[in-house]
Length: 243
Image (tube, rainbow, N blue to C red):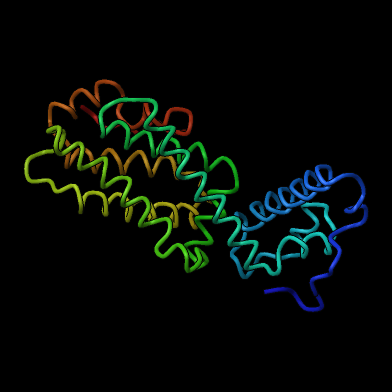
């Protein structure tokens, strides 16, 4: 919702009509990008209700008129941030798959790509917004259903390849990794502002794979450094599972 006294103007900003159509379009895209970059920083640092349009304006250095030309309300900005988060998540899954490896290693690489993406504000902001119910009606259950589908597919491939221990079902395993990961994000956000998230991710993946992966695969995985080697620079501590 808009803040008191705010109303959408008809003209976005001074000078918006200067130049040809391509120049105006480029300026409009740059303005929209500046607003979204500022909004991602704001929503990453505060809840939806705590986030301020005034601070978004201050961060983006655009006029109120320009902001309302592109977005009718704070909720519409939040929805656009989740749009960007969705694109980012789909891209990072493609990137993880492109690096090769068996399905369990690809799944672990997805977790690494998520950690890389958390260095920027879009994923952090989108995760918070979705947790607060602002994924939008066009994305029911986002991003949790998406991650269940991604990991469900990878763990199904792992099961067919004999990489899971006997009796392990890929469906509840995928649900478990999503539930645990979502809980780790919320807990780490509250406890350390996400500073210890990589350590929590490392521990959770090692414990889960230790209980569900084929012993031969697990032995080879741990010989190569396990999840600690995957997360690498994101870890500040030396938590290691003994082989």
